[in-house]
Amino acid sequence: MTSVFEEKNMFKSIMRVGLPAMLGQLTTLIYNIADTFFVSLTKEPAMIAAVTLCAPILLIIMSVACVFGMGGSSVIARLLGEEREKEAGAAMHFCIYAMVVSGIVTLVLGLTFLQPLAKISGADPDNLAHTCAYLKWIFLGAPFIMLSNGLVHLFRSIGLIKEATIGLVLGNVVNMTLDYIFIAILGWGTAGAALATSLGFVCASLYYLLCMIRQENRGNQFVSLKPRRHKTNAALIRNVISIGIPGALITVLMSVSNIVLNNYISIYGSDAVASYGIAYKLDMIPILLSVGLSQGVAPLVGYCYGKNETKRMSDIVKYTMLYGAFMGALFTVVFVLFGKPLAAIFLQERVLIDQTGDFLKILSLSAPALGVINMITGYFQALGKAVKSLIITVLRNAALFIPGVIILNCFWKLNGVVAAQPVVETILTVICILMYSNDIKTGNDSSGHSKRKKRNPE
Image 1 (cartoon, helix red, strand yellow):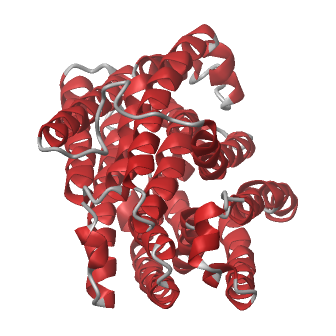
Image 2 (cartoon, rainbow, N blue to C red):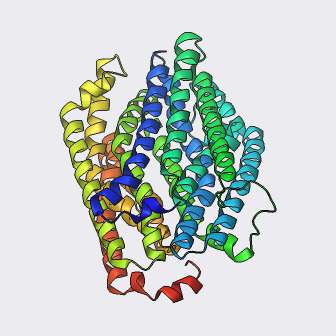
């Protein structure tokens, strides 16, 4: 199952694991844009604002899956590199059942505290009803949202790259199709958008479960759903969670920072929230492609680390950063030149189109930095260096971003709030490069292979 990680050509090895992950993220992006597009057909800024305000809550739900998906993926990839297949199977088994239980708990808590959560997200009297309608269906689909998001990472770690991508694409295609039916035809508005999202994750989850059953019938020891097939120990659980929590905090703190951002933007009215929401959705193109590239490559990095192939691992990280930075620079050029025509696809009012185009130009300035930040974060996660990935996460979404929003709002008002993202990510790029260079120089990535087998992640 690990043959995909044995490709020796550098470019091919990165593309074999990175391109499918980027394709999956691209379909996620298309569904996000389609979600906004179909809601925008209602010509109700309050509905567009509601979808924007609910995005952080959806990200938080996904982040719980990241504890077990990303944490499990890092542990499994390194165990396979060390040829410890039995322990890898136990890690896979634990992560799957943990995600199911977490999803059920989230469903119950979300429906219990629905309206308070909507208000915390920044909903005002104009869009509170639309926000609650969206969140209700998202929480009902929480178990499937978690399962499908986590299994994407777990499948990649055991070499099921194609299956991981197909499930992601399937869920997003179902989502987009149902968006059209529920919103454009039936007129269900934000509730229809959320229901389509949840049903898309249901379909993806069912596909992944079918893949697991098929793999088990073929003798794949990693994907058994039988509770007694694998014995999980406390040390393995600690390893998964210690790595997964920083990975999850990336999404949680991103959601917190977005909530802070939304609250500051909402000071300037629903039109400002709607404009920013569309600009941010478009800016998600380079963001998600960069995330897909780094997430796809991370299991390969972990596998090389487990096999003690440190030179190959270092080259993979460096080339992936270069590819990501170049891709981001292309999107910056496109958004600066064509920001307003792109905004006009979603909006009709000239004032909103101009505002959205300006926001997009500002946001896109950070696109080249994403390739560096996301890959270095993925590098530390893949190696199980949880503390270092956590430092980057906290700096990016809390320690630098939140003060940046507050300070820039004081000087440049709304444009200053939007500019917080490129300013912070430019600073963070320098910090990440210094952290990575220091990690290489201190020899943390070239310690003895036998010691690594005995050492728990940070």
